[in-house]
Image (tube, rainbow, N blue to C red; front, side, top):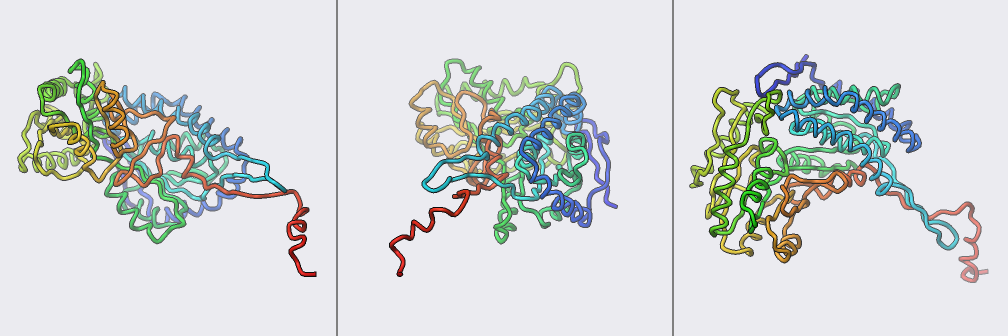
Length: 474
């Protein structure tokens, strides 16, 4: 038996322990999901809506214990974990609305019949969850997938199995006696590989661009499997002007360092004019980053950020920073350990990489790279100089610059005078290039959870003979 464990990154204390599913257990789960699919898909939509609403109610009754579990297992502060649970609860209503709007039924009269648009579920969906938002992000796949009539086999990140297990309890309560409709299997890479290689009809994945590239390759010969990839980004934030430098610095710090830099939409690159404003902004960002409170999830007063997910993650980020410094990056604010804390705790870093060739990589940590450019043309070129395309932002009061940035910047989420991490659940969320595969999630998850079926139909065959009248040989 393979044992899986998760730990509080702030203390190293054990959070969860359980058995990792082997290949046979994964196959059995997929078989149960396959057998459950016809009955679940045949239910009226109203019945599936009732189930997800019971799931929402189960989350409501458990929201504080769920938030504490997420905070403890990820290290994120309790205020942020509570926000994550609130997003999970809110996702239900948004998904019901999206299902009706984007995957509902439409009819229009035509000569001799009706044109009817319907949507049908794919079948068995595999959902692989990330560690940074272990509840909210997989929830955004699971809820719309079940609403559409699919069955789901969910593997949480091996770093956050306790959160996945808590979600499974809520679904068990909501589903009642409907075995196989939703299943949670625990495990690390081998478990995920067995799930992906199994008899699935869709893979809904949130995670790294490297993993996304791997999935693109292995599913190239499986066109029957719907693939929805929500990946990372080397996101640019162009800070061009602001009436108040401190306000602009606050946007930058929130963009780059929230969740200890462990959001796929965090700003990784700050692009500023090579001017007095650019210099003043960078100095203000570094000063504000130095005042950020760092601590464990349950400390009072609550910190703004916690540790990285693990000591290994901190070591990996530190190696990336060291490599940038070796290339000539100038350290404005160092990437340091936090004295008296576990090695997973780090401080936000700011590096000036102006004029350097640096790898187009996502450093999943609080590391911001500054580039100074001579004009806005160069700023746009720098922003688009990436193989990713998830989020981007512009800090400017100039409407003309915003219009141009919005038109020319290649990203799926483009914000103005707000953090790059800001996104509404009532809108799509996703990117292009190495950031996704043009199947955005959030409100548009309904699109990849069902396929459209177009029909031309009539109650009987009357009238078809008239279409041939005069065109047949006697």
